[in-house]
Length: 210
Image (cartoon, rainbow, N blue to C red):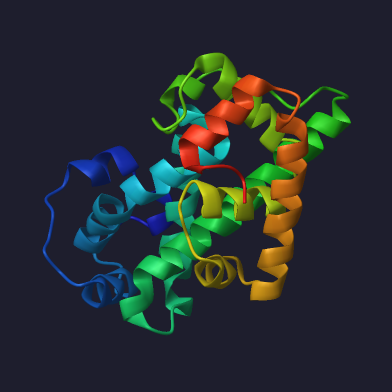
């Protein structure tokens, strides 16, 4: 059987779906069963791709990141203590990979002495955001946040996660999440105040940045 790190996700996506619990799926992944690799992709890829797309504003980046996420999930599933918590495990891996990606992208922009990159395929991002130019501006502002603040902000605003849920998937205390969210919201609000169109965009999305 092929190593999990070399699984072709296009092949995995085409295989038949199995109606098994998350715990049973986790056991299958631990046993390196082919069907479990296929089912892991089938079950969790939509969640990973959607969140990555919202966080990055880029469909192509989200697809590349999803590959990395599932490689890490398949490699490290043995560290999962509770098989029934497989979904939370995938979410936690996704957040770690996203944070690493954002840190690298931020460092790359500093080293190249360039402004944060403009994401060209933001048309693929969350349908709640309307207007290509506004979307582009929104993600440029997000690029100005630290990777932690950006993820906390997006998990709260785009994924509607609670403070406790964010703390769990990011391995932070609730007080740290609250501080990070407050800081990110304050900075985004300050930047957006200068752009009436962006103010309208965020209000349409969720009533503001609080």
